[in-house]
Amino acid sequence: MKRVLITGCSGLVGTYLIKKFLRERYHVIGVDINEPNISTNIFSFEKMDLTKEDNISNILEKYSPDVVINAFGIKGSPIRAKTKPVDFLYPSFKINTELIHQCYKRDIWLVFMSSVGVYAPAEKFVEDDVWKTLPSEHDWFPSWSKRTGELLLEAYKVQYGYDKWSIIRPANIFGEYDDFSGNGTVISTTIKKIWESEGTMECWGDGSPTRDFVFGEDVADAIYKMYKNKINDIVNFGSGEEITIKSMINDLVKISGKDITITWDSTKPNGDLRRQMDVSKQKSYNLLPSKPFVDALKKTYFYYISQFQNLNLNFNVKDFLKKGYYIGNSNELFKNINEFNDKCNLVISSSIDKSNYLYRFEYGIYDGVGDYKRNITLDEIPLREQFIKDNNGFTIQRWWETHNWTDNTVESKKYFRDLIESYVPQIYPDLKDNIRHEDNFTLYENGDFITPHQDGYNVGRYCVFLIYLSDEKDYIDGGGKLIIDNGNTKEEVLPIKYNFSILDFTENNINHSVEVVKNNFRRFTYIDFVYNESEYKTWEKQE
Image (tube, rainbow, N blue to C red):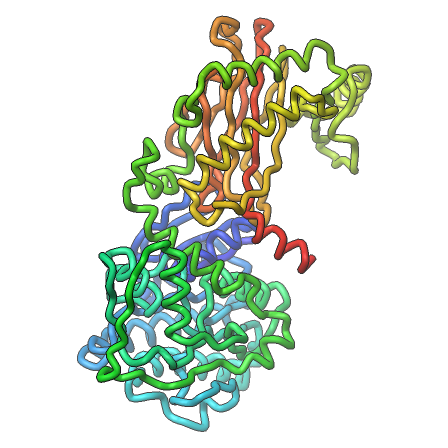
């Protein structure tokens, strides 16, 4: 397994970088002064002051990463940058200098995250223009903290031939892990103002200036591609579109669903009328962002409001996202218990014989295995068991799932889908009228189980919803519990009516398993992998 070391791992882009490299099955080593909320055995966190030179060499010696992503940066307002410039320059100079030197010595690929702040004021920012000008007086000190890192990488290339590096200059970054205190980016500050507004909101200028906004997740994807494709170059990362401040604010108000009157104070400054990245080089490397601007705004807005209590839910959404799962009672989902029970009985009656089901039987062999049928018939089960035994293999999972859909199972599936579509947008508001279902009814009988695992990454997948349908009277030490393991604690879910569970994939990928079913218990479940329909369709078109 390849290893990546990410400095500034708890920051806006750093958090997205962790998730991106974990999805690509890297062992991720994160370095920061604050620990991110990541629960997986392939993430290691080091709380460390990198201004101490030995710390950089020691951590590189300890983990021997294949690539280092330097997403470290000093946060602070323009006022702080002007009055306390040493706070920006000293740590940046020390960390960047030593990290670049150590990566050169150890022949490690380094992705250096620079900034739009390196540019002088202009309507369009072109990579080769940086050294023809001086930085803006507003970004004077922070700019040099990035410019000198870029210059040092060029120097190592000239003197030592070290060219295992990429430099990315993102535009105005926003996203879910932004600073929403009111001192963050223009988008995070606007989101906070909209949420707190009671019907009016004042904005500076007239809203006509344009800006280049990029979503943090897209920045992380581009950084990954720059390393994977070994792009030894300095590349802007812009959106490729100009967004006016007014349209951005109007989009956020619409997303909020609130009725807000905006007053534009033309006595206040507009700022630069146009600030845009030139994306010609970015486009040539196929690094343009993939997520539409409004979709990214939705994710950011809804993430921010997740910290506030929703009276329609029995839990706080942000706590759920941090924990990674929720275990509830099905009466949170339905109003009519008789209707719920009727649909459960329709599903159970469909399994009198196995004509409507196929057996999901997956295995591994230590010497490797090629493609094989995941779903087989009842008659094929003994042959597969014998094959696994003869080849010293091991079973990964085995259970039944609906294959032929009858009128009864179609009716029941629609009922459960309706429950999901009513409930899930309370957790993920951007899924309202925007859900793609990958669902089925499953049946576990004696000997059926799923080994402990984390699910692979799927574009647009938000969560998996599990509603248990079997009667409690039929459960006599029947096994089949869902075991949720977050690395520190384990929690068990009894697979009986009226329990349900949700596992989140947007912020987590919790390790889970199903223990072996026994004592003739028949474990029925409705399982629904819930996707963002528009996000999934966008991905399909790109593919």
